[in-house]
Length: 311
Length: 273
Image 1 (cartoon, rainbow over the protein chains, first blue to last red):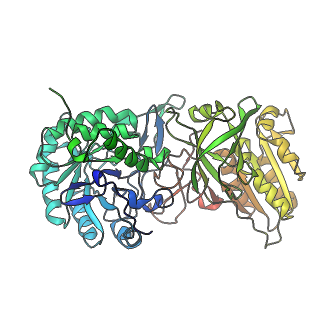
Image 2: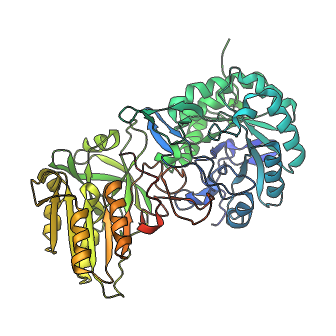
Image 3: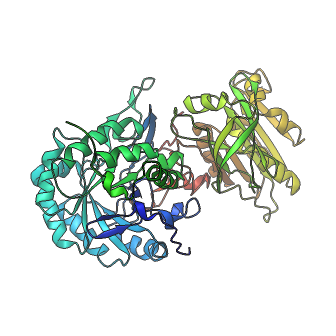
């Protein structure tokens, strides 16, 4: 658990005043509460991670089956099972504080009040660097989908959350919209410090023998390499629309994948599904980014952000 | 738990659709009976996720074997592995069979189909501990029984009953039938049932265990995203006695894969095949 600092200074980035040793983060829902990875990777080398979505109260989640593999990806309908904001602070944070990595608490709720309640609890937690608001989880009927798909509702929640929060606020965008830039603009106008994108894309898979959906919930969120081009396109569009930093998410499974997002306009990236089938992927991408800087003679990865040559 | 690149030593077909994969590791590993591994051919892009396979046998401190049935995309990819091919592996995972000897009772091991893969090391351990053990071994056909490792179990020379669905070997009945007879006719006071097999089989085993008030442990299977607790995709519904709340679902990978049978809500099916 000792803090070591053999970080490549070329990879350091800053988002809303928070220093990240590198732009490689674990994505919410795929990184547990961080501690699950303590025996698999050196958490001190990780830029940071977003916790599993936290609600004001613990949640049971959906009945199984909750996941199904698809071509180049997977569908999940976990149902936001989590230990609750209070238990996170009491049981997980004290151990996480021993690591030199930025902890982003991912927060969700079923109403504006739920979000505020969770944020208020988390404000007591020492060692949290920022909040990431999940307004787009497509898995729970009363959940984020409504808020994340409406620019007005998303802006209203962002404004309230920003007031309630003692920390920088990242809002995680839903891709299940016709024009993601409209929601992005509304949320930034309401005070978000950063946007992360994209969340999973709503999908479905059917068992042709039983003629039932393969997930007990019916639909689920599609993640993995299959969604990456959609995510890169959305980061590119949003980067040209708003002037806050972006965190790119969506099917990143290699250094080159991460670079695509950074060049398209992301300051940092989150790795999700790839953590399942390669628990050390974050470390490989950090090393790969250093190598890229070396090969491209880059003094700083920040010069790469949004450097795409288009039009 | 180690994350490593292993090397395939062999990957032979025991019977049509059933194979034995043996891998070499570059470091020593300590495995307890009932534990599993997440495996995938190195660098393969399809399918994406690793597959959870029970560790069949420890062949040496750095050599493990896996008995598996080729059922879907993941096991089909594993079936392609040739000698010296590399395998991405995370292991050993999950809890293990807890052998109860204090009550003086024996053990009844119920293997259904490829569920046998989780039970060979348990049988070896029961024999080593000189626990009075009865093996009930069920498979679809004689060939399937061979594919499920019947020869390896027979080599342990435990009292056993074999059943097949079609009667091609042993009695033509489900493996739960001799279990019920054993408990009805011989009592097996203080014994423990250890079971692994298809969900309907284990559900019936759990009912029989409850009927005869016999301790029963089951090793469950579920589609897994990660195998080490983060995806929360492999859950099984458990009895909490209360309303649906945060303890209502347990992860098969890290809370199991072995559970007391009475803990499971069997009407909520966790398996997809």
